[in-house]
Image 1 (cartoon, rainbow over the protein chains, first blue to last red):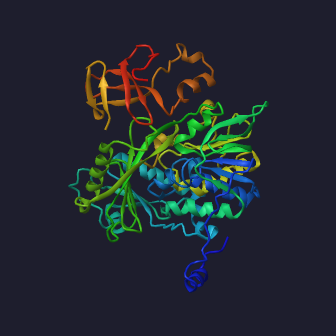
Image 2 (cartoon, rainbow over the protein chains, first blue to last red):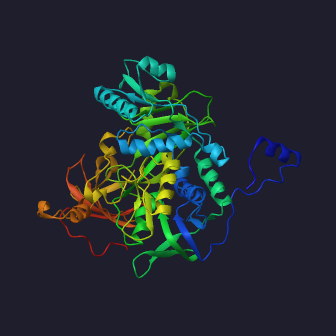
Image 3 (tube, chains in turn purple, yellow):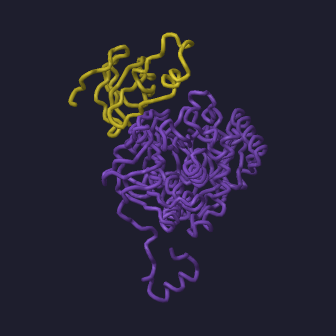
Length: 417
Length: 96
């Protein structure tokens, strides 16, 4: 792998940019690997990267039924934050946030992490109590989060409407300054490049159709659209399709898959300097470096694998955006899309061993997995390599729905689910 | 937006009149206090989450307010049929 630098740009400029190499290779699958990762999104590619970099396991394949980063990694609204209520969540999301800071240098690939701040609006007494509880819980966990008056919120985000006459007036806000955004595609590409350079095989257009198990019940490999591929260990990182893949090994999951939609506006000059979220009016917004307003909606109400949702969900979200930012009422929307998110009953992820030997699962990130990508990949690689969870993901077991040790962000989430 | 036929109102109505109510034909154990943790997990938390034909409950909350069951393709979101609550799971589906 040739290192990217200002000197590389100068060198290639001198010779007509003919020396750039492919960022990752596309090898033919081998007969067997030590580890097969199912799903080449950010979490899966990151897992392969950390398996190679931190654990020296390079005989790894990442199988992807479509194209790399084409699922929820390429469909999310790129928001990064770690202001979750519970200690377990704070641990894993802040682990990720610490890795975001420095990820571009680690990967030698600009993931455009921008700590522009994530502001959450309070519109009523309940919001104030809930957000202040989060502020205090976060600070006890060493996570920055602070309380703003409406005037301070408007100073931080000038287009915000803080009029007392608004239907849902802003009565305060919490602000995590280390929160922000990153370039979602670059995260997948950067991890793919780093993993490929260390010998990991990234195999696209290769759909897993079955999981083969030996006489002792442990996995022996996967059936795919490109034939059988042997594997000593399998890590399933298939987001909305996790239930489908896990059923191939006979494991039933506590998951439901829902459509989640997002949309972007026409590009305009910089106007929204941070991320703004509101649970009560149910919308969130940021502005990409291209100038598009990136707007996230809530999930549709029914389970689906269609990667599309209802228009009334988007209308509801745009109502909320126009409520918070009257300046955008005549903005044109360019495109909208949907992804399929896998939701657990307690709205916390599962990163764990499974009842099947050699089979590991990383799923249940629901509506907010992008922010966790580096942390999730890092501890999941540890789980696969050592056959035991990292202390950070130890609480995120699959059997917590039997033992009752739930991590109940569902009721206390900082985010609109 | 989905168009859903309520089997009680015998009409196709827009989705915003309805509330999705999860997987259908999940039987609540008659003596919930006596079942094991594994059985409770299977009843309460585990879901089929099928990619393909799903059996699910809906409630016509802004209409007749009654629960009913539906069969839908979860890839195309096309409804195959709806039927009244308490009716058995259909063995043969129309047009399948």
